[in-house]
Image (cartoon, rainbow, N blue to C red; front, side, top):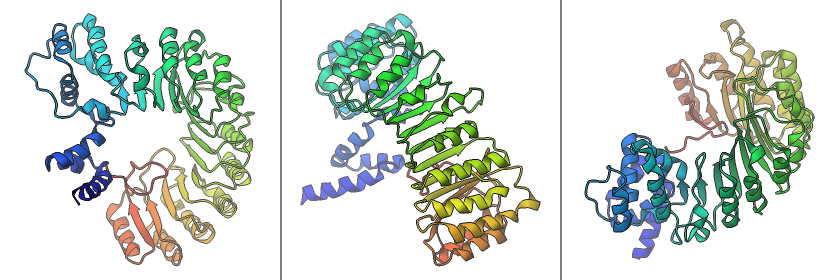
Length: 473
């Protein structure tokens, strides 16, 4: 019975794990509860380092795991360990699945004044983190990392189940070549690209991965060797994220198996014309910020009907290009489930055609042009609400509304009431749009929630784009 009770408690606490305040308070109940909670908290402890005092406390806990000899050696090289300490109640590090050497190096550099002592301290900590008793699934390596962690005893066992690696190309070849010997199971690679022309160690590491399907590329410089991209595609790459610098001509054509593409150019100073003729037949997800609409239109037209998520924001449209873009979506995306885009007043009828043709649509995030949203034009949105209630497919009941470059605004009360009155008899909707007139909107929403027309309404801006229910923080 005791074991059953602890299993039930485990399931309850697991549900609370995203509510940090409530979750941590459960630590004080008893030791049995602590044994359940601590592995959750220490799976990725680096994410809780929000304040400087937390960083020092965290480092002290890490150091408390050291043997007496290692701690004495550490004291010789730093003056922040003068106070007494005691061994921890748990082997906290053994619960870690994420090893963030980036944050570890940053904390050490913040606390230690003598630069020459930093490599010695980091080496001691690396030998603490890496041994046969650890088992990491995520590894974060800092820029210009120059430590041969593959030579540390137990490293091969420690990283045998590594699934995600985040690193920089500003790392010497011999480090990557050494890592390639022990990293065999990576599925996700986040790569900050520098002078890739001169670093073929990363290519060796990529070649050794048999399960690699997700690569996120973040560029520092424009020089990129095409050999690198050919090696990537030989690994059946399915995802590429954060391509935020100019692509050399034809690079995307290497990614014939690409399923997810995210493009970002918030400053709008990079030419993207090299993408216009790219064909991505297996593309399922397209996310773009600040990318020219003509390029996005061509990308969608060159897919093969598998796109199920399109998220487009911070894009400048004129009326004609907005119309052409919406047409490209409903002509080429019959399996679309989630859509975020701007709709101009003159193209609301094109949106209706999209709703009719994209029958699998489940979530819709509509952006409006702030210049069109003036008092004398708000009645135009009555037509929008009529179309949403008349032509939305059965599965579409999740809506968000906002501006293209901002979020808060007000719909007229009469327009909202028209929307909700016409929605009667359909699936209760999940609705989000932050309003400048909170109390008026709140009263309307509460009325229609009581009638079962609205299931949930929120006026908050910090949700994920296709997340309609707030997650515990």
